[in-house]
Figure (cartoon, rainbow, N blue to C red):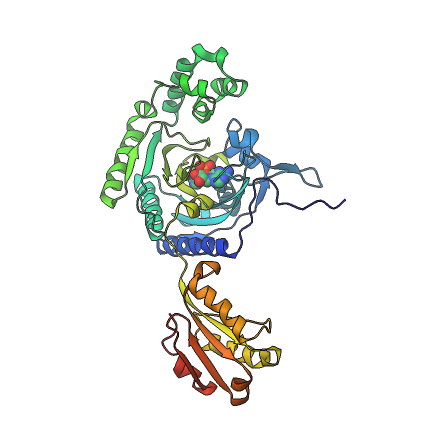
Length: 431
Ligand code: HAM
């Protein structure tokens, strides 16, 4: 049996024209986050299943129905990471977080896995770019992370977005909020589906994640998070709003944001984009002051976010790839290949920023030139962002005379000169 092989449902291949965009976004992340003192962390793609149950939470959709969980050959239960915060905290606790100087500033980029119903912008393997700041309890930490996030979005040309923020009560206040929520929904308990009834009993905050329209209706007029904050939490929230205003971070407040993960305490936030369809959340994040202790470390406050990189790239209109000049080196026939490969090597050495591509099909200068001309007219066909195309024509004449014919396909100007003059002739053609 030979069936047609296909990528698994919910995954997608990134060919060069896409992956170059992802790489440019990741390079921008490295530059912007690096400028704030954040260093990259890479944690394993799979972790023990228990890690996610204990951090993301048993009653969340992620743990309850979206994880790729499997036993390894020794019967250990492993899970492909559905998110990266738990892995980062596990890594820090394992390394000895108490001995690492604070604040700890980390960022990451990588694949995450959730068994969700695929649709535009929602995949089973997707990529996240995330940031975690550990060791800062004050609202200045939340503000740094949010301001850095907007510096990053701004560098990608996404200037028309705003954050929606909320504050989730913690400790006794959270218990009081959960109880009030239970009392509000309890009269409708027999109309709830099995999952939502379990949420009502075990973790009423998770009712806000329900996609059941009836449950959503029962939540209308439900108690609001902000009304349950204790004095210290309220002060934290006010301080954050004040700082965001001073730093020029655009935000609105909404009691409806509770986020679908259990580890959040106090600040939570999301950013959505009108340029995306139903799956319009570009990113989400918040504070998780109890997670390090819950995973066996010393109490350590923390705050962070993760951006859905696939959605981010979809929402971007600016091209963040560096514009580059393409030198199309065109040998006339196979007998010119050695000369052409040598000239190509020399141009790369002289102009490290440019792309030098040799046409190695031996199809003649005419055909090679017409393919180069097509790229000059439609640069979008190339994986890289092509600013201009220069053809380097190398036939028997050039080979015998050790010369080079250079044709600028943008202006049409053509010139033949000795190869030893390459350096001076190419000077200034970098861009
Ligand atoms: P999250 O809200 O579960 O948070 O995911 C963050 C972002 O990942 C979402 O806003 C969305 O853009 C993207 N995303 C989630 N699921 C999918 C999917 N199936 N397909 C495509 N994109 C998706 C977290 O993961 C937290 N770890 C964020 C965080 C970091 N909180 C504190 N630190």
